[in-house]
Amino acid sequence: MAKVTDAVAALALPVVEQAGCSLWDVEYVKEAGTWFLRVYIDREGGVSIDDCEAVSRPLSDLLDQADPIEGSYTFEVSSAGADRALKKPEHFAAFLGEEVEVKLYRPREGRKEFVGVLKGYEIGDVTLDVNGAETRFSKQEIALVRLYPRF
Image (cartoon, rainbow, N blue to C red):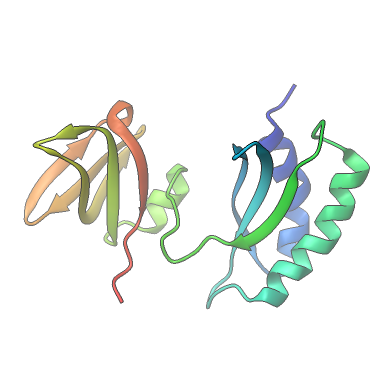
């Protein structure tokens, strides 16, 4: 059986594209005792509330028909956000040269968070330019990589 997120992504993709957006990610997570199904979308120029609604309504109907998830859950559609998590190879490829934050499971050099320019991605390993020094993080030590917007 396919993972819930894969099944939902397959259902969501045509709906998201019909709304003129792209599918960024699908999450199915338990928080504070409640299951959440989150569909993250993206669009050139940014995602509006109307974009979220244009995806949410028809996708909710499709989810009710296909019923890929047993039990109850809260369904959300939202923008991937300015500080979006990078998870897939295509995410990393799209943001090479951009500033990102890498969070580690265990401290390295006394810290667990590093901010730098994304220089490379290879089979889960991430390379950053941190203050002029090239630093490579292995897939096993990385808890999260996300864009690091400065305002």
